[in-house]
Each structure stands twice: as structure tokens, then as C-alpha cells.
Image 1 (tube, rainbow, N blue to C red):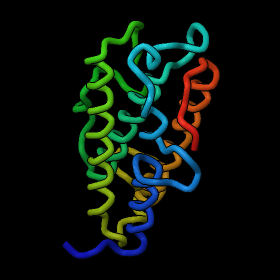
Image 2: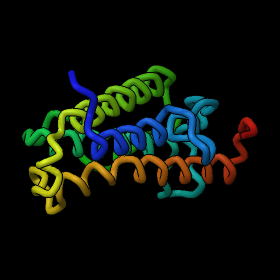
Image 3: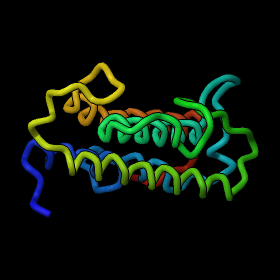
Image 4: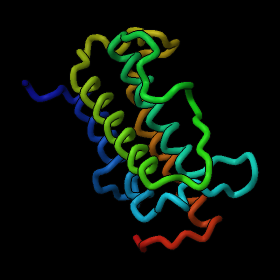
Length: 166
């Protein structure tokens, strides 16, 4: 397979850095959960507020939605029932936490592969099932991960989770 054009290579790099590759800004999404155990992942800062596990599932769902839009696929094949936000009950079993991480990793690979296959001539067309262009859809994935990473870092501070120094 030929190397992606510069218009595709940069978003691919942004996807990697925001998710699991070394970043200048500190922890990426994957790094923000490195030392978070199942018990902590289900803690809420207050009733009705989101926990770390819910932020991760939300990210997985939007990675799925992005992939679906880039590929023109129909809705309904996400691993969990529902959309956008998924309630997590405490205590969170360790097996569920492992499942959440595996889902997030799987759903990250899918939009990355879809972006790598995008024809640069299609960047200005509307993405399937979206009011945004393919370009805007692609460029929204990495900032969404970074935003959620920041929310997780804030939760760790609010709930006194020890974190490694950066």
C-alpha cells in the first residue's frame, strides 16, 4: 500500500498521539488511564456525574460512529446497546474494565484504518450520516480524545488518584 498523502498522514499522526503514542503535552487518552484500576474507574465525583469508565466507553462509541461515517456503514453494530453514554455501575468488575479497554483499543484501530483509506479527493464531501465533511469528521477524532483525557485527568485529581509524574 502506498504511503498516505500529506493530507491524510497528519490526521493519522494526530490520532496516534492523542490516543497512545508519545505526546509533547503529557498523557494521551491511553496514558491517562494507565494506573486507573476497576474500582477507581467507576468512582463518581458527585451523583449524576460521569466516571472514568463512562468517558472511555463514550470515546469508544464515537470512534465507532466516526468509522461508520467514514465507511458509509449503517448504524447498529456497536458492541454495547445504546449510544453516546453508557452507564457503569460501581463496583466495576475487573473483567468489565478489561473489556472496556479492549473495546476502546479495537474501536481506535477502526477509524485509524478508515482514515488511512480516505481518498484526499473525498475530504470535502459530506460524511455518511453526518452534516460534517469527511475532513471535519477526521479532524474531530483526536481533539475528542484529548478533551476526554483532560476530563479523566481532572477526575483523577478530584478523586485523589495517585498519578505518575510527567
